[in-house]
Length: 194
Image (tube, rainbow, N blue to C red; front, side, top):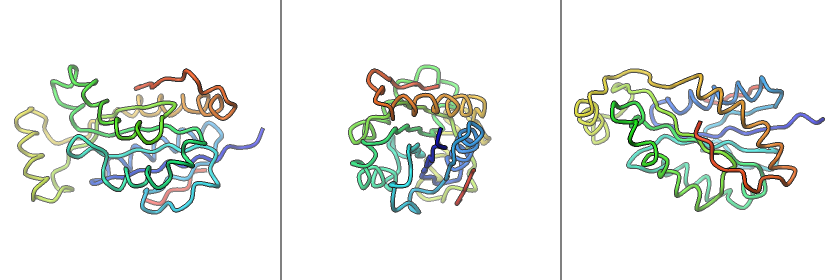
């Protein structure tokens, strides 16, 4: 069996999503794949990859503009390859998050409109005021943090991230062999350019 080459591409503002992408890449590499983890701005061509995982931080209830541009620019090629998507959103760390999973999952709508993933995941991120410019995002983030009683901290669930990544291998194999029909979203080498 040929070693699969997988791209894990991400867009991040404060580094939290990059860390999630690294963990996904490491898990895929442990499963035997050759993996490149790259910021989306550093990816020009997808031809060399057998599968793609793409993820973005969430701002304003949407993927970052550069992440959506990446999907638009490569949508035809992504539709021909196994593709999985994840998002990182601090809303999932907030005390009321239990009632908002469906709301956060709706932030994937723009992604689904461009390319249908064989798997999706939504992860909580990290909250670090020092990594966000004060105006305007920093002020909004601080107000939301105080109002929701969510103090700064790292809320990423590494076990859930690794478990989702480990499940991608079989899905990518099924998708590439033409068995992707019916695969739904599931919420739940390493070369890095960070």
